[in-house]
Image 1: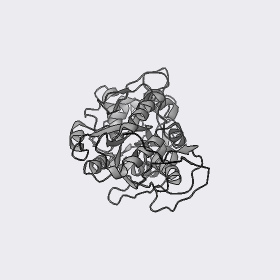
Image 2: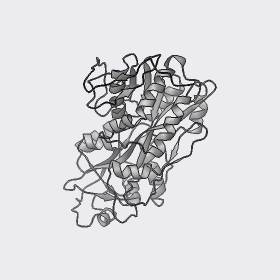
Image 3: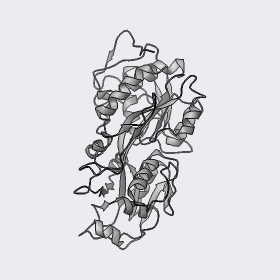
Image 4: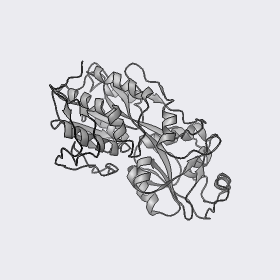
Length: 380
């Protein structure tokens, strides 16, 4: 099915349009599992807008749910898209990747956001809500998982896979443990207990971190990569915002969250010793180096990626993530199909990716974006 366009393409000027906001996302997205906030394609006019967005000939309101890692990106996109296409609203609930996929497979949302590709069982379940097709993974938001810390007297910290695994599995419990000291010569590490925080909810962020640990810890992380936390000890908090808030408020603590949360909370991120000539800082540019080498491992219309968490390439930050938008390749609801394709066409465009580049995200490299751009018009 061809992407339908209205008779004219609506140009966007900076600050030209402001829409009434209902329950808009905060700067870091929604992070309450029990009473998840929602957002509509509304808000103040964007600081920068693409020259044009192709609105659907048949505009409609859409529902989305899932990843909080992409919450700020969705907030940026819905504002710009809603300003261009006033008949196309988006209400997105940041309930976490696991809950988002569940809602998609229950037919409750137009698309889901997930920090991890669909599992075979989830693909099978999606066939019930995608008549004649199935749910597919569309890479849309690049990012990285920061190892955030709040250690008394320490502003720069170097860690590696085995050490991170042992910290989050309560095998290393003091900040002045010899393993941490060896990675940080010259640093004054306190003889304090480590307060480690992990996600309490099923999370694609957790899956990406544990995939890294499974590949790089030399067996110190004995659990499989999974959305559900399996490490021993530590304390839990709901969603990335909850983990970030705890690390910010608790001295001598450590946790993990997307770079956007580290930045918005003014939290320090550990550099990672990967086997390259020097530790790699948690920056978007360094994450892009890793994402650019990702290979498509999905079959058919599925664009699930294989990320090289064990990379030793110079300047390649290893704990990366790609957030997918999950939609039906065939069997999408007719009333929202055109709007869905219009929205996704914008978000994967050069302008859409550039719009989230200063929000702690990693614009997807052309090697990945071009595949998504070619697939979206075929959604039916």
